[in-house]
Amino acid sequence: MKEYLGIVQNFILTDDKKLKHMQSDLGLKSTAKILDECEWQINYKTDLYLDDIQSLYKKYLNDYTIYNNVQDENFRWAETTLALVNEIKAPYVFYLTEDRMFHNTTKEEFSEIVDEMVKNDIGWMCISKMWKYSKTIHPEISKQQNLPPYMDNDKHIYTYLSKNSPYYVESVDSIWRKDVLVDSLTDLLGKNHPQYQKPHMLEHYHPNWLPKRYPNMLCAVTKKEIIVSDDDPGYEKIGESGQFK
Image 1 (cartoon, rainbow, N blue to C red):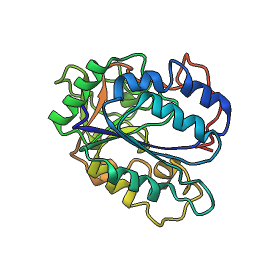
Image 2 (cartoon, helix red, strand yellow):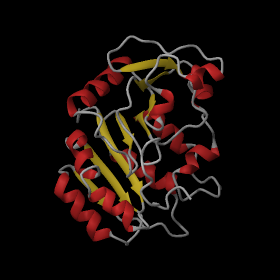
Image 3 (spheres, one colour):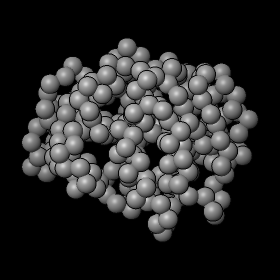
Image 4 (cartoon, helix red, strand yellow):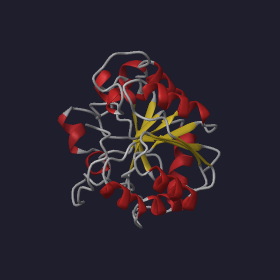
């Protein structure tokens, strides 16, 4: 999996609830069981809990770099994230937010998913709100938009053409073919927007533009809910990171 997938994080913690989650068995320990072989490029955007974060990553990861480019009035999320992405050697990049949980999958299963993405030349696979977009070949969100069912040609993923995407926004919580992510971030460089310091810049500046830019690009969604978040149904909210405010 290492040769195909790299991990990028650009985040901030503003309360100890998120920190305690990252230090728990469902936090980085669980994530590293799946993604420890990959290259990680990380920017931690504050000095708060910096020593804790550095110790945590040192404990569970080997191939990683942590920067401490602090989020001040001059900080720009797109520019900083693009610099991290350009450091990744693999052809796919997973933009990973700190509250994602991986206890519903295994390294073997996840590696097979990545293999299927490479085999199909998938351009984008969103991992946010899998409960809404996965688990069935024709989810309700697609039916509501009069979109066709997904295509079912693989063991772990459904596929669809970008022009048939059920997603209303280009969520950063995704696994991207590197060139597609670079293109999306490059479009944001120097742009003025209230969210210029934060990941929501991507979603707010241009809602899902992929169907227009790459209408026939093959996209994917997993067949099962392999990754969950603290704001998914059935999970308890784990404090606030300050990232998306």
